[in-house]
Length: 442
Ligand SMILES: [Fe+2]
Image (cartoon, rainbow, N blue to C red; front, top):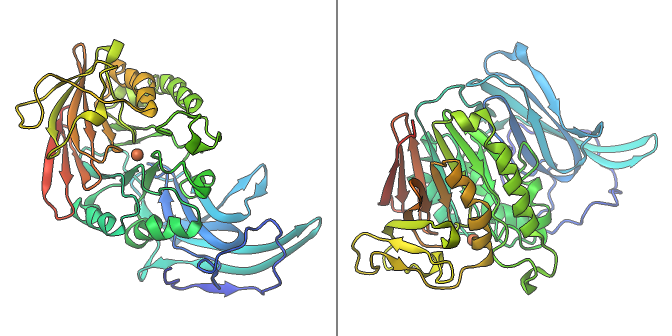
């Protein structure tokens, strides 16, 4: 899967007796305990979650220090209820850290073969200190940042070549972080698929030194791995919905849930997303009270599924740049009475009333999330899901909520400055499909 540089193996090998361990497939069997390089989750100004995986049950720790200052060395470990975590998903939080500071780090895992009262059997111990010939390192986000860039990618649906091309053409090198906005790790049944169809690429290209965020779409909730996917993408609050801040931009990551009703046959009676979205609606009321939200220059929301329809809310959608040949069927319905205001176009008439049946998830997000964004003056909503591009604005009364619904064949590069946010929708050949400018409220 990757080359373990400067890997030290310590200790002995004993017969495997950890009864709770799931059997490994042939593809995942490895003589190496540490099976992938680390990747950064939950990056912020003062903390980060160092994440990696082991081929066997293990406990882990991270040694870290300010780069160039080995005398500041510290060790962090993960424990729950007073017990050090033992498993195959390793997640160690480093905190508190200094903003805008470079740290060097090393990851360590020690195999745990058996735990009995007063008797413990350990296996090998491994350490990983570098990637691509350089010491593992990262820089925490700065306390202040007027100008920065980030990338949004969505709906990859296992397309590794598209993934690589979009990271390249959207400017991975200069971006502060990458946000994957759903339908990325789709319908997965094995850990191998999570690596082969997604995780190998950020691990190879950037993720040991630059963080990324993984939002669930409606496909991350399907398949055998759906109930352990949080182990691969841990967040600071152990949820898939959370907030973070970079510079003067306050980000709200919403977890859209499934697209169909909870009782649909496709879900086998095992989902409860209506309640889950209501839970987030209540959480949003707490978010708006946060000084960080109140004081932010820009408030940016991510939600994989876009809200659709207007209905009683009297929301209108102004579609600025539809994709070529795009039909508006998928973002509205007669039932909701949504009207679309569209500049002259061969395909779409100005003031068209949308037709087509909305999906349950769309309606839920319209009713539970969209009112919050309108009432509390969100500055941008970034979505995917439709597999078609809609550059539009949702209007309610005097308030305009800019919305970009990205298609499944492009990435979005966002350049932030005090004067404006510039969004560019970029194809894998580097061409810019459309752009959008957001100016601050104040
Ligand atoms: Fe989707």
